[in-house]
Length: 281
Figure 1 (tube, rainbow, N blue to C red):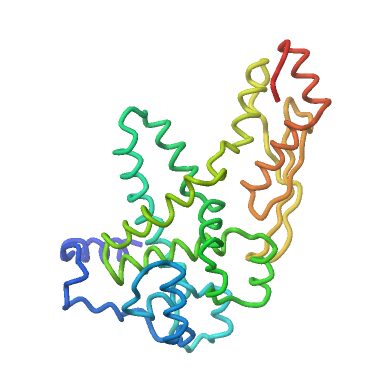
Figure 2 (cartoon, rainbow, N blue to C red):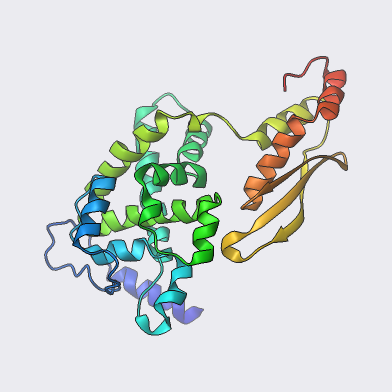
């Protein structure tokens, strides 16, 4: 571990300045071997779908390669999944959205800005955008992972879109990445009901605490399926009593569904109403 941190430190001390598209000395092919599924025709289709210009298809091939597809390519292919690009894209997206919200909402406090960012930058919203772009037609994945994606797994498409943002950043520079986020993603989200407050856990917490109960407790009842097709069943408890259950592709999704189930539980609703006069659930 010490050697790893020393290696990172040595790289930081020799870190080059941020590059621009015009920096001809930057080698954008390192770490991006040719996969081959983005031929000229497919590149044009992807450019049209995303309204971008692609200079180096290799980067986008990696951005669209799900880890499950690595079994198809084989260990000796030298290729990588999109997980590294997803890591970078998440950070690039975060700074662009934070910058946008900060300067467009000068009267908002930190808590409000954080909540707005969570509405914009989450798996559901990113998957929604990916579907609107038709990104599922380009993602390379195994049969079982494809089945999971078609079954409603948001993480595959959301991760792919973050990787695409990183690909734009590497291939065309930060300005073009920012343009993509501001002109393609944010308007799409702001015009949809996806920004409605659907944080059922927060709503449930406020309602139970308003009548003197302790915070709801979420317990995983069951977890099944392979890593790319997980299903969680979660129960939510108030004062040790089960008031709702939910299913989801992730623990968070299952917890939200359990909270919604509790809010729609007539017996539990009537109990809250009797304790607080009238509770609008």
